[in-house]
Length: 282
Image (cartoon, rainbow, N blue to C red; front, side):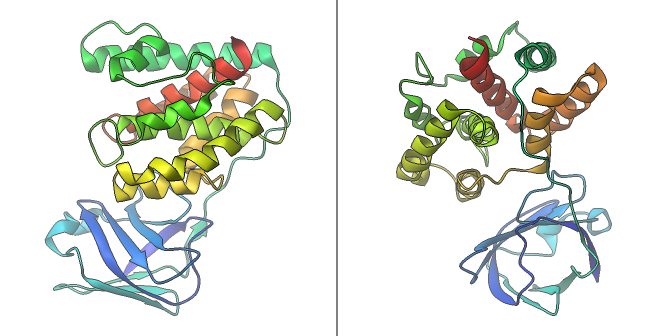
């Protein structure tokens, strides 16, 4: 039996039945019969914690695709998730701890934010320039490189960003990851910044109209974002951009996000930096 180490704050504690939606070397996605939690993930503890995921140490399993198949039946009873595969797997969630969520934002200090954004942009552009093997010395240049659409003014027509949904390669396309970063900022600011709250509400209306253009996995994370739920690294990066007073804290938060996926972390950071620049620093 595998022990779940952490669990997201939206993970169910009631019984459910489900099936394996998708399986990768170190993660499994499950669709459930629960209305409130229709999607649950089992992730290796080296992957970022999310609100609907249990983190486990899967390294002893080597490659989950060799022992679990799409369509395998799943059920949870008494806090134990059982996957009815050719090599039956059981995950005990009873001892899993909740990961810490970032506190709500309560203050906008533009001088502090500007300093932290400069650090974020410096680290991000160095990372993507090296990866893409070409100079991309600003977040704006990186957004152009990705081929993403942004409005002339985020206040006038923020919904234009939803045209990027599904644009790009991978399980979570670049356009979706960028939008996720934008939504993380708007959600975090919505209690203390009227324009951010208004823009976030407009996204809540328009994202569902385009969400079918992307992958099931990406649609799941966008749906969570529309209800103010984000992964642990994204939550804390937004929080530190507004509150951190030292460079090491920012460097650690940015690096953690850059390590997510092939480019998902970088694309999400680009959305976060873009949104803060547009809302507060332009």
